[in-house]
Image (tube, rainbow, N blue to C red; front, side):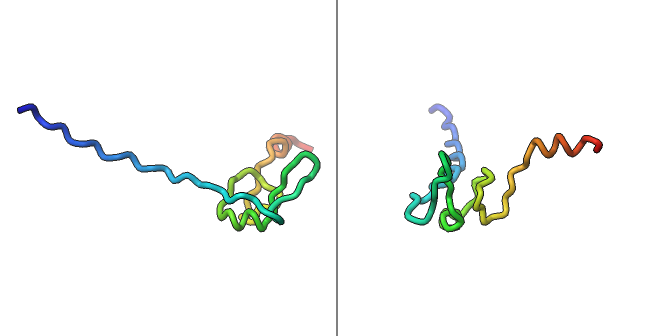
Length: 74
């Protein structure tokens, strides 16, 4: 009889986050931009780290222009 190979352990499944469908009061338009409100962000329950205008989680997207200017002397 041939030796039986052990069954490999399954790889952990990465949890996929699904955001709720935006409803009334969850967004508004600012010119061509679709802007989510704080209400929507809280209902979604996690920070996307995109630098959203109404982010209730305190994330601030770094500004590369400020980083370049920081190294210059006045």
